[in-house]
Image (cartoon, rainbow, N blue to C red; front, side):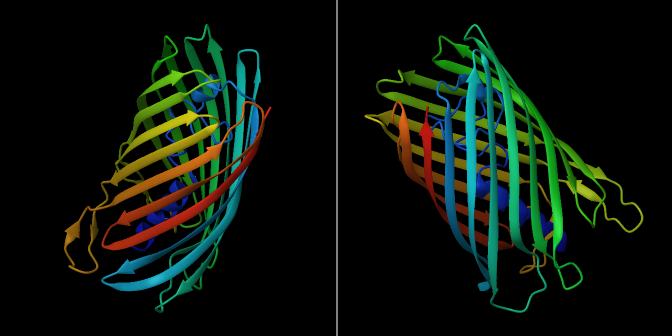
Length: 329
């Protein structure tokens, strides 16, 4: 139960940062109309038609409630950066983030709670005949968490390699998918390994100089995996998960309006701390909206806001606001 709660917290923290399972405006098949937005999967980078650099500043707050009692509150602050460049039909995007969290305990608990998160990703893609984009990527993420007086700064690391493909039909309809191989390590479990498989469809209408519209629906699934304990290290288990993303963006007169919804379920058995009954309820929901000014060339400025909810025997509620700035070259 103890480490299960920690894993749930880490996942929702990465989700709020936009780096987990392609939640960054659901960019699994196509890139966002916001060129300063980090690209979650490799192949969408191939459809980027502008070179850009972006930086974001985020403030986030939230709490955990169990049985009507608020266990703790937290405030998170951090920054993110993104760069996208192209060389003929070769495209590269790179992004990173770093967040620090201050936690206020309302009742005496030993943990777990988050201290800080950091991560980075690089994507390379190659486009052929404006028909197909094939991409490769690498991602690293690190979470530092307080577990107990004996483990005041436990570090969880995730490293993954990604490969995916995006096919364009008349530069309007897009279809594709890919796979991500994930490796997780920390000080109290053996190394964990699993794969995330993604697929999606997208529609893009309009021209860069006029009204543009983009919508994308994608899903990611991963099977349950387990690695046997060894010595003092515990078993590393990844439970079966399913994630669905819905994204929509519209741009006119230099303004972008965006909306995103991410739903995730995890098939993880546990004993409900309130009812003391067996349960597998473990659902996450993330809704995001944003408004930005994006010129053909020049300064980008806008904001995004997120609301994230995690339902288990406890409830986590997160809300964040991000100021986004950048430059289109």
